[in-house]
Length: 425
Image (cartoon, rainbow, N blue to C red):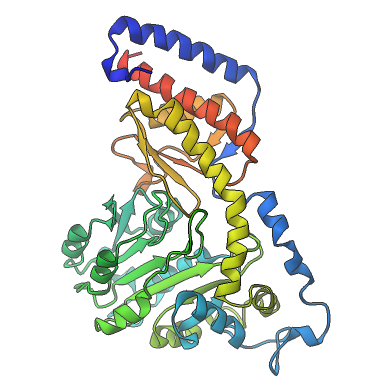
């Protein structure tokens, strides 16, 4: 193949006619394929469905002397708090166990910050003249939606190969109106970046002007390797404590991509002072989360070591899908020279940057050909990708044979949009 930048106009027109014919063929197939969201595949849900059989007697419902079927234990069953402390390398007293969605607790933290303030807030955020959130991008669209929903000003922080631009963050937090930053520190969504030790150290050593500045440390993919061995990750809770700001960070994780995406458990890890504060705050709205499900997960997952064994079984399903994406991109797109992408070893996404000014066109072409992708622009605050370039690929849901078809369409759409741009069509 010849790179598009090396083709003359006649060659580009010939290539355009060829790719357009291929695209019309793709459209004629009437496909209905989905690469929009990082949903576990049916095969992944099936492989852990024996979790439904781990509690079959009344005795199974007890965590020591605590009956999981009854009220109480708002911060979580002792065994569930100990399980998450093992996973995140912190203390059980630094864990609050939630329901199926960690995103729900993240939103609750922001909501309480606005209505009542965080532990060190001089006033509720709704009483502030302005509240600003730092948003590393490309990033997770639902983080941005929460900030936008509450009316915060969202400030884009560029991502680098080692994490977000820490120099920019260190400057921005000098502004007392900057109250929060969202990050996915391991296998970031969508770039698949593992934050470097230096980046993590600089996070822990931030000196924000706002006394209630909060780091939302969304460690959603903390055990989610699909190639290679488990990558250990520093405990941000203890690092912030060592740096003298123990209450600055809120870490979140869940079993959404370990057991059932709609029926798992989640946790918030934070300083003991924050756990005590939010146990009181959350106690206004609930007696407890689902402790039966907490105990079911503890009995099934057991501990971090056993969970990592389960994750290897997930990896055997995930790895072929990511290899499929890589093979198509390297064969069909790499020689043409107009796009680049990440090559993650874990997480749930591939982040691709195509020719500037064409991502929305690629998304529309895919949609018209029966392939659903994450909306172009979604990985940036306010859904505004300034380069109209980033596209998030989510290979997890379709079986490999469907993914092959979807990637055939996707790579065709990438080519067609690039050629249209080059020919000013």
